[in-house]
Image (tube, rainbow, N blue to C red; front, side, top):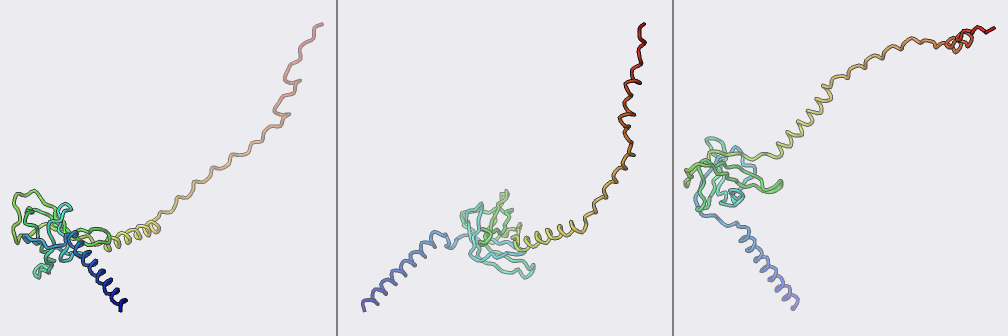
Length: 195
């Protein structure tokens, strides 16, 4: 009997600890809802962006993605963002979907322009950039690298033939020692002897 009471108390402590950890991570993760105005942007692809992902300006969270739907007229993904009411967004802002890391999630990045006119509630960001598809980029890189190596092996021009070696000069026999050097008698004329 005492063993089951100990297990029950221990299980209660584990549950309370897990609940405290959950509340702490929720508050520190800034995952709460954002109250503010809504703006939208159309993208040709969202690349894994989800409802609840962050909206950032210069790396600072200013809102979150509120809704993603298909625009049935243009067949584009319409992303509705909820922006903090204390942050004003110029109407020439660029919206782009970025990756947090190679393996991480996505977020919406807003790059404000220099216009004095601000977007109102229900406004639309007209300048957008869809995320780069990593798999497609890797495929293009690998395909182009293999094409270059194939082209290098098939289109290689043959090496020019080596220039013919010059013909050897005709052999000239060196004169023998006797022919080359005159004898002592021939080289020095005899002096007349005095009488």
